[in-house]
Image (cartoon, rainbow, N blue to C red; front, side):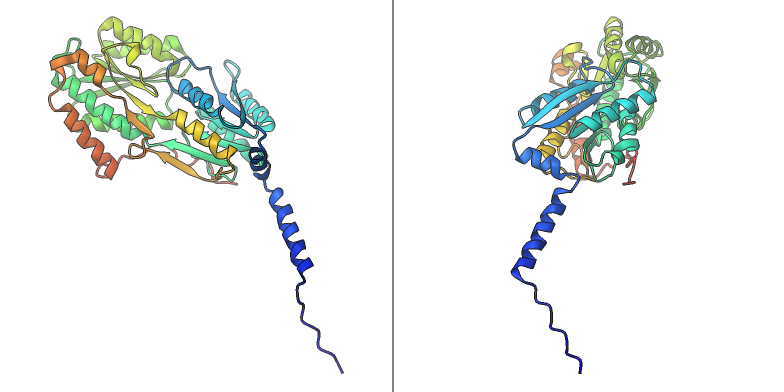
Amino acid sequence: MRHSESPFVPSPVFFLLCLILLALCATSSPYAAETATAAGGHPLRVALLLEHPGGDGGWNDALLRGLERARQLPVAAEVLVAPAQADTAAIQEFFRNAASSHDLVLVASDRLHEALRNNAANYRRTLFGCIDAGIRAPNIMCITFADEQAAYLAGAAAAMITTQTSLPGINADRTIGWLSGQDVPAMRSLLNGFVEGARLVDPEVRVINRITGSFTDAAAGGKAASELLDQGADILVLASGLGNGPALEEAAKRGAYVIGLDGNQDGRLPGRVITSIVKKADDAVYDLVAAAASGNFKGKEILVRDLKNGGVDITDMGPFRTWAGKNVPAGMDRRLRELRGELENGGIRLKSLRERTLCDCL
């Protein structure tokens, strides 16, 4: 006669062993080391990677401001700049060296985005903060920008000024020049938003585009600005990195007006800076470092900063209005407020030309 087996009844010791095993599994997580580091009061090792130093008054300077703010957190932060004239292989090696020696690595430029996409899977215990692009992976958290919305407002303002005012230096050509360092998705998206805003005001306005080929070629910026002005542009949008300085000098010599990018450029050409298109890279850097330091880093998350949440904007036009006086187009402020409201509530929808995500492979 067979005896039936007694049912298994877990003992308190069994439950205790299960809890211990769960704890051991948790500590083997790719992100446990970073969380423990922050919780234990030990500084998180953070690297901000740049392709060229700051000093352009724009994007890189904004990134550096954000990292400086983040130093108040329990982190050990440093800035690493890629070798001058680095080719693709050198950029990849530069990235890998940083990834192997830091807990959190921040990247915010196109070639470094590509390096991140190609190498993140090999550094699963390293966290990566991706700024200005979306790369979906378990150890990458991204903050990108709907900066085409701010560009739309700037385009509308520029068109009103070039078509509706008698400001000195404004000619009858109804032409605006756009100066860019490289033809990349982020720049195309900005330009597209700007053109749509300008043509809403005046469908006949021309926006002519010049690409210098590099965000680090200062001399090319001055040359391209001169070419745009020769073709009738009386307003220049400056998005060429280190080329913006010489372009500003050319605009000043020719009595033209400018629209800046990434930071408030009013002080660089007083009275003739209409506004600046701003995306808050400093906040993005700080928020990513704070998330990692506090154990709240969320892999695979892509956050979009826009007009409504304050991540992008145009700067106050007060200094320009003061200089222009009665030549400011009638109703310009009211019209820009209306357009802002439409953008924020979805009445105006702009197509982003950015790549939605560079990778969803891990």
